[in-house]
Length: 554
Image 1 (cartoon, rainbow, N blue to C red):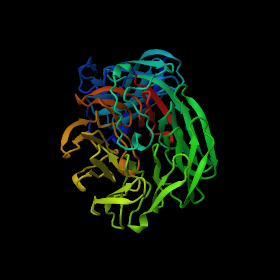
Image 2 (cartoon, rainbow, N blue to C red; image 1 turned 30 degrees about the vertical axis):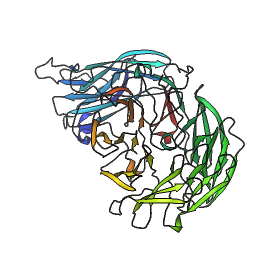
Image 3 (cartoon, rainbow, N blue to C red; image 1 turned 90 degrees about the horizontal axis):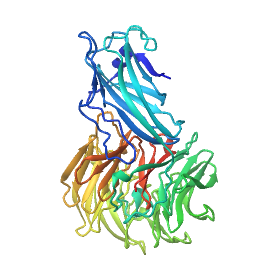
């Protein structure tokens, strides 16, 4: 049965459009392929010029092919380019689905003659392969009837959608893999997982929706075959565990009242997080296995939740959220090892999460009302301030209360200020070895040799040693927007030995760091994290972070 997905007046839509055309790059494929979602150009497109006075329309790309996990939905996008301007001509535009895979559709005017169509697939489709045609009509009357089609109309775009059952195959730990235990994946906060991946092995694993009205979800951490995240609302807060083997909730630990939670740290077979309620905060430790046997330690009176804890077998570190102190706890008893009072030296801890190595804890924070920032280095065992290195001056505006340093290697610490400035600190020389300014849309990630960050036009890669740009990767099309890090929506990249994962508003791409080309894409978006067993998690930017897609990487 042919289903009408969209019928509208082009004269109204084109008047609302903005921006230039550019090639569309929105078709993406799921697992087991190295095809990029960026089609680009006009090769292989469909153009009909059957009438000398007719409308020529090019549909990009020439066909759509995608796969989704059962219960999930995707956004399929194509661009319709015409040789005429319809503004003011009162013609209607209709898109019909021959196989009824679409749940909703929207149209955006990119220019007076270019239109982008976005089709949301249904989440209720049974497992199987759906092949059909999207039929594009331009008519003088209403597109449902289309008794008066414009010469050349309709145009047809074939599609294939494969709905896959959850692929919950057993996965051994990836060689060199590590659990994603805290902010940016590890205690160093660098977003780097030292594994080598083959995109031909990728496949959807499961989809899980936790979204509920008025609930907001924290980012995820992973250990022991489970993912952990918190939810918060006026009615109460929950710490949740998702079983990677089943794709289902493993346990829920609930806390009543108007509760706010941090992203948890998953370490030592425990989950550590900070809970704020009724003007006071406490750090919690609960069992990863059962979600019970909580141990707590009050942090003090404040209304701002502290930063995500950073933990290893030696100790647990974090800030209290009120800018009062940096703390260190015993990982087993949650008793204080030490507290550093920032007011003694002007350090304002804010809600950042410190990075740690075997000997030191690192904090990058403001030091005065002007907004000057410095890197502070503490002895992990005693809490003694070992040194501070002056960083950004107050002339760089912005709030860094939720930022964190990243240890790229044993000699260099990378910081980001308000999405405007990257600074690389030389620990041996106690200096800033280089700075780079721009409009950065994500926190940076780094390997021992290179820094990766998303700007307004794409990825830029810089040398850890001198900050020089090594290479860039442009976003596939102007419509692939990203959410600005500097406006408070902190979005992540994820780096491996051979691939950089980056999410736009509609797709996740894997970029080969050697060829600098996109080698895989998936038509979902979200915050990125990875388990030791090689499962990539996409935590949606939408629905308050409660929609989770898992992808097998082996």
